Length: 291
Image (cartoon, rainbow, N blue to C red; front, side, top):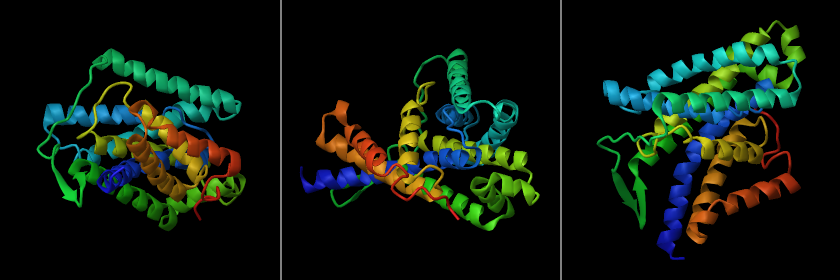
């Protein structure tokens, strides 16, 4: 492998890793507070991508500006899902909750198929093909903006969790649910806020990637799988670990694509995943939640 190809793989991996980190951060937040693994996370991302696409196609809204609309809209959708679907079934067994979110994902994907069929759609804007060189590596501007925006969003959410009353309530509920209820925290409302924030995170990630990624009902399946891998690598419920894990997975996938045939490019990612499960099941960053 030449130095230029290696540099290109590293740059591409870091740009992709930021998006993975943001998707996984929302998933980790939901798990940390609600203690459920949300299989509908990727389907929510898919709906956000369609929302971004239609805002652009019908109203000419730039995909990046659409974040202003998609983030609050999908926060509200997450709150509704939590209150209507998840909260009434909190007493159900854990595997029943997993099946509930899986069923929700299937519902959203099939709803998208009914409404928009399975055609691939793309958003083409003036900067879709913009790029520049760093040494011998090509940096695509839309991917750079997506990765940078994902990191800024994740850092902003981290600051929100540490500095605001709602953020502190979220952390308290994640650490000790009974204690949080005893000190007067509205547990049901905070659970809804957690699901809403997780949905808003993945919606922002979806909006950020639409200038360079196709939109289809099954678009988010690979992101969903990678998000689960990232969350396990970073430590279940560890928010900043999820962001760091996103960069690790992005690098591993990109380097795997450079070293291995195309069909095996994710082999490196899953090898790391299996090794972490075997030797450090609490995750690379200790499994402790953000304090």
